[in-house]
Image 1 (spheres, rainbow, N blue to C red):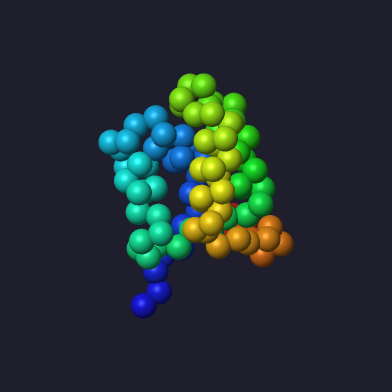
Image 2 (image 1 turned 90 degrees about the horizontal axis):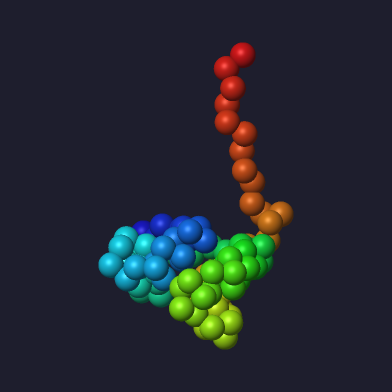
Length: 94
């Protein structure tokens, strides 16, 4: 049986860093346990880094902490090229 595949939104990471008691922190604590697989793209990893660097003072992180966190997320994730991602249009009734 295959495990679910997920994409972790940047807001989940920020929320997990703001509070270790919430669902976001619980989700991140499950990384690497084989309960689900994480998919990531280069633009998403760059977004993680950009947002976390901008919010680092608020989150109590150094620039090095941000780089290490993003590196850790990339290490457990499966990288995908954007060309492989297809976002379908919602079906419109005509």
